[in-house]
Image 1 (cartoon, each protein chain N blue to C red):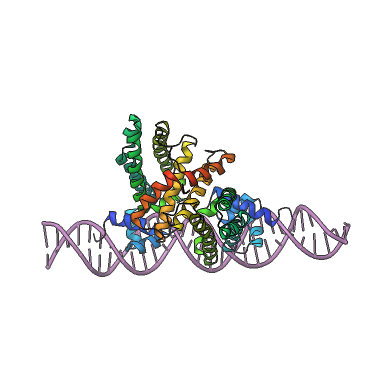
Image 2 (image 1 turned 30 degrees about the vertical axis):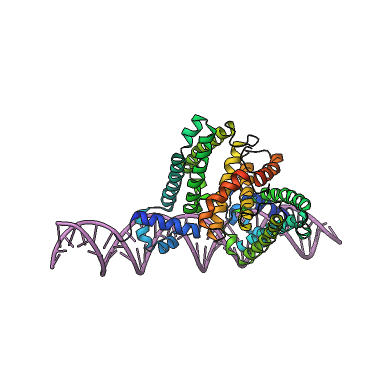
Length: 187
Length: 187
DNA sequence: CTCGTATGAAACAACTTTGTCGCAAACTAG
DNA sequence: CTAGTTTGCGACAAAGTTGTTTCATACGAG
C-alpha cells in the first residue's frame, strides 16, 4: 500500500482546490494512482465528493467545538464571548485554506445529506453570533444570517488571496479579525 | 423573432444564477427555446460563456465609471473619495444580484481573455482603494488586494443571502456599507 | 521463496454533452 | 396570399466521463 486512503483524500482536496471541476481521471493523475485504484477506494464520484464534504464539515464542526462557542454563548459573558470569537476566527481561517474548494463548490449543494449538515452547523454558528449580539460584543442592527455570510465571504477572501500570494499566511488571521470586527474605514 | 438575443442572455444569466452547472440543453429549456436555436445565437458553449462574462465585466466597468472613482482618486479629497466609495458600493451590490453566478464561476477562470480583463478591472478598483488609504478614508494597515477581496467576499454574501431571502433587498446596500466600513463589533 | 493482496494498464459499455444538419411547420413582411 | 426567414424537432457523429472488468505484474508478510 504505497499510498494510504488519507493521502488520497488529502491530495484530492489539493487538486480540487486548484481545479474544482476535475474529472476522476484528472484526480487520479494528480493523486498519483490509476483511475482503477481510485475507483477501488471510492466506487463512484459522488461517494468521493461525499467523503470530502463530510471531511470538510467535520473540520468545521471541530472548529466550532474547539473555539468553545457553545459554552461561551451559554455563559453570556462578553469577555468570554469575545475570546471565543477570536479563537473561532483562527480555526475558520485554517480550515478555509485547507478546504477552500468546498467554500464555493456547487456539486455539494445537490447532496441533501451535506446541505442538511451545512444548515445545522450554520445554525450553531449563527446561534453564537446571536449570543454575541445580546452580550454587546457584535452589533445588533444586522440580521444574524448576514453576519454569518459576511464571515463566510471573508473566508473566501482568505482562500483567494492566499492562493495568489497576495497576503502572508501569518497575516490572514489578523486581517479577518480586523475586517470582521472593525471594518476598513480609517478612524 | 419571439425572443430577442437580449432576452436569451438575460434568461441564461437567470438560469446560471440558479444552477451554475447547467448544460446547453438545460439552458435552452430554461430560456424557452430549442437547443438548436440557442446554438444559432451562440455557436459554442464557450461563446455563450464568453458573452455572459463580458457582459458581467462590462457592468463592473460601468459601475466603476458611474461611481466616478477615477476622478475622486485623482483629486485626493477625502470627502469626495468617501462619496465615490458609497456610490461604488451601491453599484456593486446591484451587479452582485444580477451577475451572481459570475462571482464564483470556475469556467470563466479558464478563458484568458476574461481573466485578463478581470485583472485590469481589479487593478482599477484597487487603485481607488489605495487612493482612499492615502486620503485617510480607508485604513492603511492592510494590503490593497485584501481590501478588494474583502469587498468581493461581501458581494458573495449579498448574493447568497438574497438568494435565500435572508435579508431585504433594500437593506443590502446598508449592510455592505456597514460591514465594509465599520465591521461587526459593537462599540 | 511463496502466497495473497494491491496495483496499473487496457478495454468495454453506457451515458451525457456538444456541435451539426436536414426538414417541416410557423411566422412575417410585402 | 406568397416568399423568405426563423423556429422546433429529430437524428447524427464526435468527444468526454463514469463505472466495471480482466489480466498481468509488483509488492509484502510469513
